[in-house]
Amino acid sequence: MKSLVEAVLVRGGVAHLARQFRKNGTLVLAYHNIVPDGEPVTGDLSLHLTQQRFAEHLDLLVRYCDVIPLDSVFGHTADTRRPTIAITFDDAYRGAVTAGVSELVRRGLPATVFVVPSFIGGHSFWWDELIPAAEKEAHEFRERALGELRGRDADIRSWAATQGMQPQRPPQHAVAAAEEELRAAAVQPGITLGSHTWSHPNLSRLKENSVKEELTRSREWLTQRFDSVIPWLAYPYGLASPMVEQIAAATGHRAALRVSGGWLPTTDWSALALPRLNVPAGVSSHGLTLRLSGIMRH
Image (cartoon, rainbow, N blue to C red; front, side, top):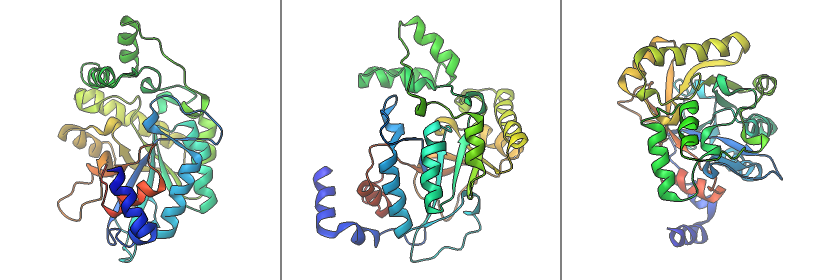
């Protein structure tokens, strides 16, 4: 794939590929953390994009796309010459809320941050402290964490301790933001907040009452503290079920997002199961161009 990518870029360049973008489509991008310039990258490396690379992504989007607020994607009248993009962040990492938002504000771009209230205040996530280095062991650990342990942070940490796993504390940019940092971001023009549940479990493995509590408690916490909250939900781990979608609607969510799937469909879609394009940390501006043009889809 690398040789194909290089050949395409050399032959056509970014401007050529930009002309291949889906002109009348809408795409929601899913980012996680933004690592401030000069800070180390640790934890789940796929989630921690450097500030410089994020800035390059934004410059590309400004040049070739229309970046719009997430809550306006339903009523937006597309410019058939340019694709429509909405930017989101999952988990409300400190780096995203500070360095990431600063890059957005510098360019006048909107974005939505999905918040896990129980982590706000400098708490770290299990996947940044406990994932084994070996690929096979990491896959098995993640399968257990999301399945048997239902994605619950405390349960995962308890089980890991019985296996002798020692957590590695991530740097301060890779923990959840403080409430004051979230408030400073939320008052910036175009920055909105949405729910990522109360404690980031795998909702598809919970009972109905637990799902309702996760969704209700998170929305209440957000709306009691901030004015820029929109009725959108991002499913933790991108996982849901028909029952979860029904409860999301019943608890006041206008729409809900997975973390994969690509472009928003033009027909036969559900507002409670909308796709996104996950943007891994290793994706350069050229890689993002290739994804927007359809040459690469993951």
